Image 1 (cartoon, rainbow, N blue to C red):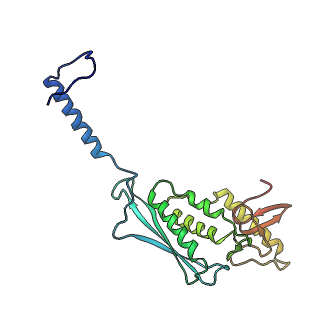
Image 2 (image 1 turned 120 degrees about the vertical axis):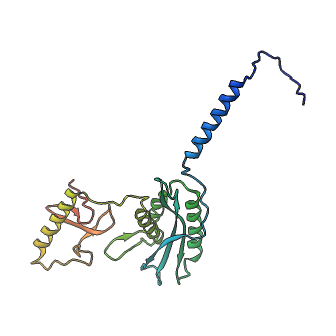
Image 3 (image 1 turned 135 degrees about the vertical axis):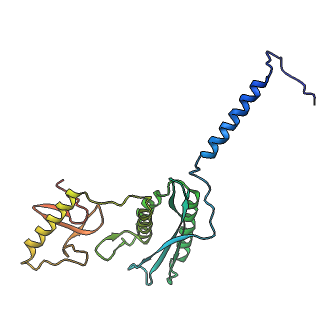
Length: 234
């Protein structure tokens, strides 16, 4: 087929047999390299079988417990990059008071999970939601600002279990300091009828603003948390 050249010809070159051989060799090399590439961000299609975990959440603001199920998919199975990531979330309960917004929330969260990428931001977004009523305390004295925030804590726990988030923990020095402070406090208050709750913290402890747990006590004129080690005195 004849092709009409509209522009002025400024130069030309002939393709010889060696050029064809070199082009074929480069094409073969690129094909071999592409075969070795491990795709990290492939689309998240739902497999026929999927595994997950279900968490029971009982709160003072709902008559019945919430059952939160988070299902995972295995990414890059059989490779050094193999890992699990959340794919979908469901929340079930006999309590229908919050049905509409819970369904909406889980659908949006599932869409974020399936889109891929970093989904850990959902934890902080959910945990920063506050109820107008002021929130509530869980068993053990931990303060939760809202039901949505408690859902965020469940998501955080799940992401920690599958390795997407690191579990916060005290180092050896901090653990020893907290243990010593707790033993010292209990010894001083033993004769005064000092009692501890089910979580092992003094019943008269204040709320720690860092970990939201009633575990902060005043020792030597300094407010110290027996749960996370937070201290106003450094």
